[in-house]
Length: 188
Image (cartoon, rainbow, N blue to C red):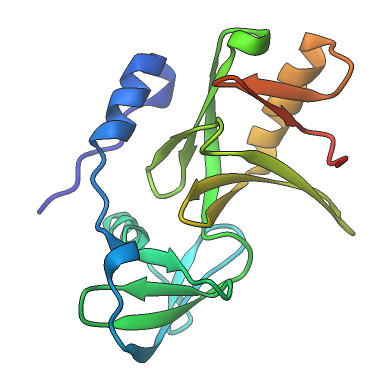
């Protein structure tokens, strides 16, 4: 089954983005509970590159397919799961990277949509929170994707968010999306 080419986020309206997100049918990985079968010999690097047996997976369609069967376990580990097998996969940071941003509106009426390196489009809001964690090497922004899976917000996208927040000149550096406020300064 050939995968559809990714739409250009900059040309989509928020209504188009919402429709595409609603149409995306993901496998029900949360319902599959096969016995653990071992290690997939796969790793997702911090930059979002997928590796198998130490070599990058060069076929974007394979990465997109694998991303649909990825699940986070209650202990925080990650697995690739099908109805008949469950395989460990190493994730260095977050399994996805937010690589593109679309912003519409201002202030409380703003909506922020992100394209992930997997091709998924996620709109920040109450179900898809945007958080910033302070680490020794600076702030790391994350977007909740689904089922405990997160996307690391890429550096250029984070800078876009910060610029938007600074333009708003509010008391706290942050942005609204779908009625929820997300601080971007890393403070609790």
